[in-house]
Length: 338
Image 1 (cartoon, rainbow, N blue to C red):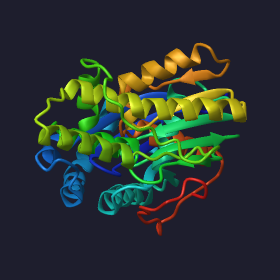
Image 2 (cartoon, rainbow, N blue to C red):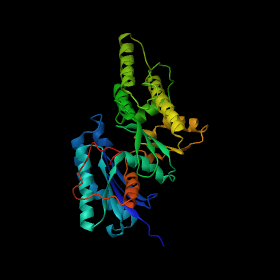
Image 3 (cartoon, rainbow, N blue to C red):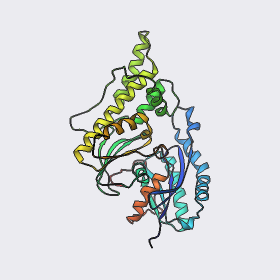
Image 4 (cartoon, rainbow, N blue to C red):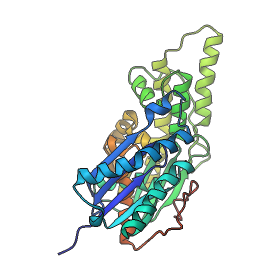
């Protein structure tokens, strides 16, 4: 009889304090997330020092709640997985030190997980992964196309050169005086308006799978300023729809091209912006005509959570990879070499 594997995951890379327990890398036993959005809203973005202090306050409570909800003790946990990077260094430190303390106190194996690998492995909690596969990672700080030929192997074939899609959403939202985080508000407005404004698409050089959204963000700001100077009215709904249409056009076009070139079995959507209804709908429409399987995680697994960290950590644990008490927060951790 094969013994089940239970991995406890800890995620504190930004402004969510999260702890989860995953069974055999594919089944959520419990997934607790304490969000700090209300604390950061008035600043229009995440304040690192405030985020770190909230993690210190919450991590023990969230851990206790996860174990209680799962009706488990630390003795039943096989491994502890924690986000090692990238992220805010102060925030990462809280999770890493909490994980090291648990591993030391209970004599449990410890593995450090790359945050983006976690987002990708959130999809394994939906459906088993088939290789080779491609993942479109779209989050606040990352826009990447990641090729995987086997578990634990990551090749970045395209990445953002400046603003990631999520950053562009937040900056455009701020220009429109919308609350933080801006993505959901832009998405909502976009569905109320029409893409009537001609905004740029940054395709970059021929054959490139890289992304650039800084120029688009600047075009939105300039469009608003020019209209104001001329006394013209631009409806926020139409601006949001035009902006979102540009972002989605570039993301979907480059993704489909890569899917065909690399002949992948699956396309996985990952990251906080994966919750965007417009992007999800556009991908679903295009992939109806393709042989490649499209997997999109539920909204609860798109934003930062610890279930994804435990899911990725399970693979590392099974591959025999281990961290030690010298593990430190690594805000610049490279997904191809972690």
